[in-house]
Image (tube, rainbow, N blue to C red; front, side, top):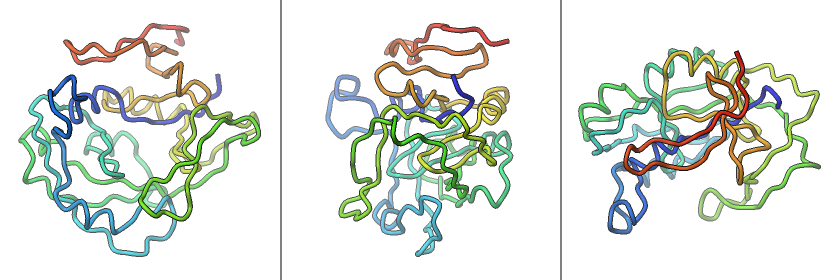
Length: 229
């Protein structure tokens, strides 16, 4: 296994905020919303490029009292708590944060002091000749048709200079461990070549394989594959 990982929203976040029809009994029932989502959408996603439009103050509404994660993504935005920002300790040249209006949200969410994060660093670490991918657009009418990867092969000579970076979204193992040791939740750190059909995570215990979701306890079920001291 390499020491480059993909940070992804955990099931613990997504299953609470955006439950499936079986969980909530009706299509379109979510416990998270950006009330001015069209304004935020029209500002665009920079994908580490210079921003063409000022980013608006997103009006975040979270109504799930049980939600307690430090990270989640919604409508193309990455929300990070104050605790996660402190743990990431990223340089202003590597990331920018945008203030939000969380007054429509429940108290537990407001206490997290979320901001929207946009990483700025770009590095090329993937081996495209060995990577399986499919083409898809993140936005209606997006002419760039960005690649949405399934399992990503990482170059053996990849030595990233930044802890968190675009080119896809990646991070270093040291970055992942820093976040995990701070007790931050809501993120899984997935091995790029074990992302889709057989997810493997880097955790404080070592390498764990995703088994399933416990709908009663609302936690992910994993099994330890390799212990790493």
